[in-house]
Length: 263
Image: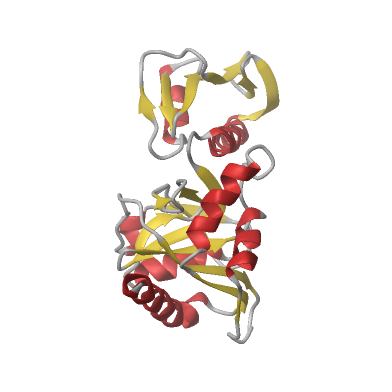
């Protein structure tokens, strides 16, 4: 199967049609099939015994394991490859939702509680954009990366399950939106909600630390991040239960949107 996601060419190979179908389900949102594969990176699974599977990139073995493990590795490498090499886009490790046409970014790696907070925001009426990557263009606007949410049964635990946004009664966004709020938050059970406000420069540094192409395309990354942060309110701190802070976040992003329109 040949196609592209966010301008990154991909060739997906598997020993049989059933396995290929499972691999295609793991591809980044927005993957589109196309005929020409010139310049595309080849990702594939191979097996000699139907028990152990090798994950390969351009013919080089990346890792070997049982099928479910191999599919997880394939998923991780393909998503990372697209995030690093997307044309005219800067991928930031962050959750993203929109409220009344303005985005809330929640930068952070795994186990910082961003997916749980995204889910609570969506349940409160926000539009879902991503729980993994905020995809920014060079004007600093956020584009959809609407994969299923990887929700953990309890915050801080590793066990997780994928859930479609419609199961939460939410909807996914389709149009790029400007950033109104950047919430750099860490979950800590029982924490009191007392965030500090960051300057635009501090907000850019926070986002830059989570930008996938920060080391390979630093100037392009900084430009997109500066434009994303220039009219946004930025917060940093710890939080307790996600549901408790959602009303305040929505109020703040609404105020930021009103300020943007006033100027």
